[in-house]
Amino acid sequence: MSLRLHQLINRVSHQKEQRRFRKTFTVVKSLCNMWFMDYLTITLLFSAISLVAIFAALLSGLFGIGGGFFVVPFLHALLSIMYPEIESPMVIATTTSLLNILVVNSLSMYHRLAEIKKNSSDMLWSALPCAIGSVIGVLISKVVYDDVLQVIFAVFLGLSLLVKLNRQYILSIKIEKRNLWPAIFFIAIICAMCGVGVALILFPVVLSWKDDKLATSAICSFNSITLAFSGLLTTYFFPGSHTQYPFFYEDIYLPMIASAIVLTPYFSGLGIKLNQFFSEQVLINLLIAIISILIILQLLTL
Image (cartoon, rainbow, N blue to C red; front, side, top):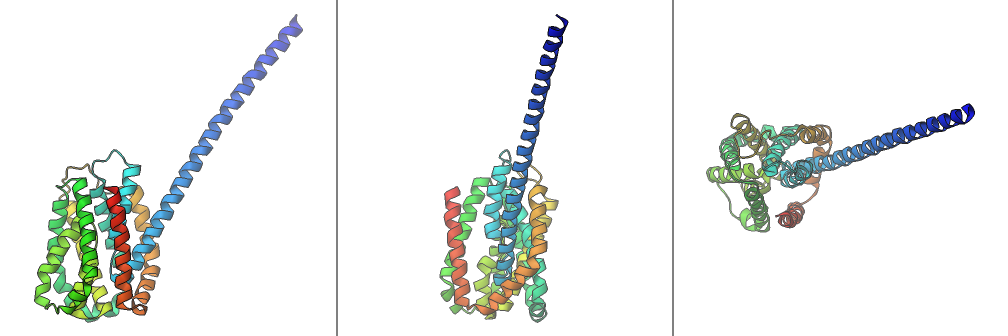
């Protein structure tokens, strides 16, 4: 009797150990799956952000563009997926894009030292209307809703495409220096609202005045820095908006800025070399193709 009781106790103990082992194994397996999924998600996120940083650096070198016109749709989609509870991802996307523009264009200016010395007076002269327009544009973006900003962004891309398609007409008009102020002012307003640099529209306008690709890229890059810096200062001192604070999410903007700091010095230099290698027609056609693709994608998300 005691032997049977002992065997029964051993069997029950063995079954308990098996159940405990299975439970522990299940927990460990779940944790491993969660770790793998988190690792995979982080890897994909960093890969996407790195590709965006590379593209932004190349365009900064080619046109003096900080890449905001494709960074904004990317960030808007990313924020909508990662933070579905936020009220207005477009406002956060545009503000984060301005920070990225500031970093990318500031780093790429190292490769433009010769052009900066030759065109410093023109850069400073054009900075004032750009800064004022940026402040007004950012303040407007804080009081309109996400859907309205998306429509404005799509309209901006369409306007950019029209400017590029009619560039021959724009280049045929010899714009005087004194007439550039109102043009820069109004361009800065809509660019600040959309979180993009001014070069996308301003490049052919300045090119018709300067008639020099490298000088035009340097002036546009400096104006994009001015626009981004003024817009970020406005956001810092006047953060009020219908959307919730903060305007920056560190798990998105920190890897983006880190990628920009590491990759921009190399790829912006490559973009500047490509600017010298390709003709104006090729550069404009490339920009038209990129904008056309972005317009289609933006319309699909409305």
